[in-house]
Image (cartoon, rainbow, N blue to C red; front, side, top):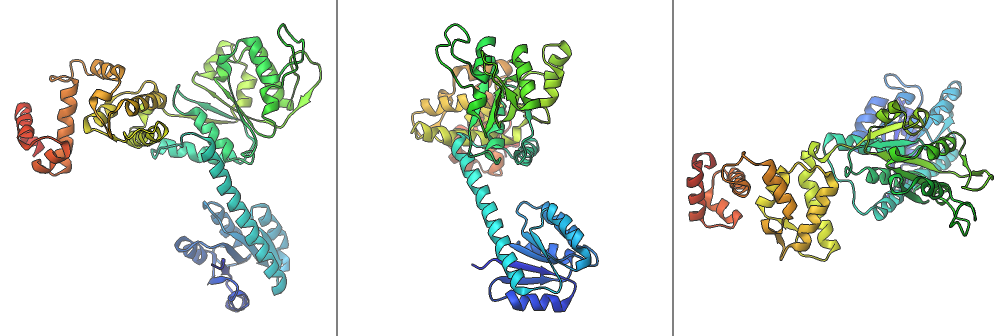
Length: 451
């Protein structure tokens, strides 16, 4: 299919001339001003806009500004009078592809249009490749439609195109590493290494060697020269997890790197320079550690150019069902198990749990149930004992019939509400007899509520 071109000019003769000149090569539409152009693009996006610079109402720069806010803006070439060349050059700095002065040389304009469309095509292909690479490199995609997660993904995508340092804060198990992966694989560094280091996993001397490398003989056991993670991450991204546990000596070296982009291997006086972006994460409150004197204030602000806070799972109730289903399908494929469906009472139990271990705890629980299930459906007998015990403890004194019966009660009420009180249909969905359903409702004394 031919590329689509929108011609925007308040002069009718110019619009018609350009439409006739390029109508056989492209799908051409026209608009008489910037506002009409935006309305048309909202209905039907296009690949390239040819726009006059000076128009009544919304002028060319205003149109460019509005287009830059869209997710997939078209390429834009300005057509301008000689008196507006300075403005056109300014527009190119703001994202316009090029400009051409009046009277228009149609042959030259045709070449500019072809080049603009090729550049846009390459840019979109690059975006697709980065997205594909990110998805192939991350085991589990980001799942979440709650406003907090949408804001985080938007921030991560926006900052990915830069080299700014990002500090990701949040409780353990909230997906901080996944956000770091998103930033890396959406960035111009996506084709280069994404190197991860858990700062809490190494003793002080060992961590410095891990980060910066060492020379042969630098310490007992250093029998050969070794590259550190900074060198391994050259042209890519270094992710420093649990940055709050970074010892004081390593904090000094990291600060120097962020200031000068240089470091030395342990046991060497030779200065090395690498091109590395730093992303870091912590579950602790770094501001408190700064006040306590255990974390350098200057390093904290160097790391926290952009701050992203991941919410705990208990604040993401709207995402819980989607996360459960995602992990179900993921682990059923991973372990080649048929279990990919939850019994209603199991799903209700998962919804009622507070998930102190956040997404990591949910993943562990779902994986265990998938592995233990005998068939396609996961039942209460497949739920890990520790989760049942936690829910029993949380519900102590709150459920007169015990946790399991309380869950069964709520599940039946939910199904009856979905079937608008149709007990026969509810019994079929629940997999129990109609007489059994009536007996349970009579025992709970809430048949009128259910109906």
